[in-house]
Image (cartoon, rainbow, N blue to C red):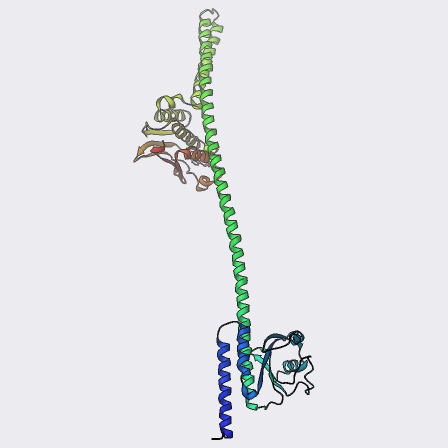
Length: 432
Ligand SMILES: Nc1ncnc2c1ncn2[C@@H]1O[C@H](COP(=O)(O)OP(=O)(O)OP(=O)(O)O)[C@@H](O)[C@H]1O
Ligand SMILES: [Mg+2]
């Protein structure tokens, strides 16, 4: 049965719908833009009704510089063509004109159409469809399709071509945005990588500085411990020399004076000599006291409790202060070095009470419970201020802490304004 005009129309519409659907599918699928556009152009060249030859291409538009740049072609094009068409200014030749006007352009023959300004040595007679690719933000590019000369134009097909142009423009824009996002993503990753590298570097530097600092602190602690030891040795030596040498010389002097006294007839001279004997006695007492305070031999001979009791007695005698010592219990396991440290802490603390507290009473206690040695010194004076306890200028308090730290000892100072201060030393017996 021969085809009627209606049959032809239906066939054409079906064909248009098929092509549109195919192109849309291709452009929706993920993948590389060039491959995608080549596939779309291949489908278009199958659009028999437009009599399109198997040749097409797409320019991308640089709307700022008003120039088209050849992006991708489908079919066989000569090197000369590819080279010459690399860039086409807006308004130039067919594609440039379509870019400038934004309108679809049709041309029957490249030889007879005066708008076809660009010619090539191997140019054969052909016609054109030039389709602007318009996206949401304007012109994206130009699609050109080759046709044979004198194609039959269908108004309807032009609309289909414009729709396809819109689809292609959308796909190009989407890909461009994806590329920009990917570039931005890469840039961000590089920035993060660089920041991570810097942070790692400065963290490592910080760690090594902290380690260096710790090392220095340990060295300083050792040095301070050594200085204390040397001071104690020195004090012991001076104490012994003052006591023995000076004490013996003074005793000898006294003996001589007493012997001389027996041979004196002059009463006046005798009483003056007696005065001299008294003076030697008080000097002897001073010598003994100085020697004792430098390093009480009682500490080494009889232990902490005896030494503290003796020292407390001395403070009571010299200052208006009552000191309670009944809670002192000896700890036989304590090493000589720790004994010295505890005694010096006690001395420094008593000196502070006398100098700063204005106290009338003090109470001492020393003992061991559950493997922990505890020394407590309380006074009823003004109460140490919290700021003094942490002050880096409180060298006396720092010295006390330093003396105890080699033994794992801890010291706290608790002051209540107007009521007094409690100093508490705790340290594990195993380090004693
Ligand atoms: N028992 C106390 N009662 C009240 N205040 C005290 C007592 N002990 C210490 N303080 C306060 O804490 C401060 C710091 O004491 P620390 O022993 O470190 O220094 P210092 O006695 O002033 O000087 P030094 O270096 O000669 O010991 C003192 O100046 C004083 O104000
Ligand atoms: Mg002090």
